[in-house]
Image (cartoon, rainbow, N blue to C red):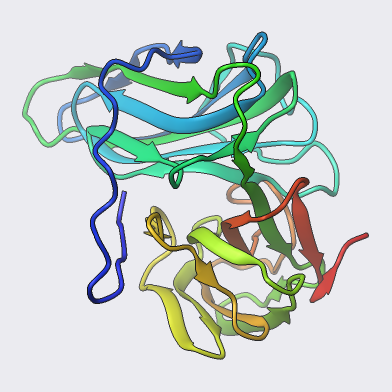
Length: 287
């Protein structure tokens, strides 16, 4: 997790080590040959019982961790328990939503104080894991992801997801393509976390508002995130975003939710106050 703090802003509170997980899942072992590298996706469903909102994410990867993301989907993409080498993120037109991202073997990501993210009673998830074996011996990597929930009946400020989605992506073969857009969020919306999401052909992504550049990543996979925990960033004007792509293949790539078969150019964010997820489709906030 990457935390961005303004000058003079106090550091976020330390996690409460005594808090218990309301939900967790362990992925099947990911087998790696000596010097090997794999990206896999695990499909599962989060159920929180009586709890209705998440206040913290946690993850552990035994070794070789390079990037882990938890994405929520509108419907189950593949049956629970599936571990796939080809990652699919959509079962229809709805884009995935970023719940959590980590680039460390052991990671904890808290919400701001007295804030939490409401989730449905049964939320389909895709856990995307990229691991590298730098040793000269085969290795099995084990990963676990968990969430701490707000106790039932406890009040909190709602945090929700925001995602931008373009339906008009067209990456010509052997060419560089720059895609850009802008989304105007409801007045008073603040950012808690901000990242981007693409499917492997991006060379850079960037997000600005009227206050300046908020996020930039030179690459495609594992962009990390910027987080404002002590004082969420009030969005100034539209969120403007740019994705730069290189398509080395012989076929054009269009908008799609399967790695290697399509591309996405998405802002992935957590925002407050927001009682329901926000989606920006082709630069217009969906009703």
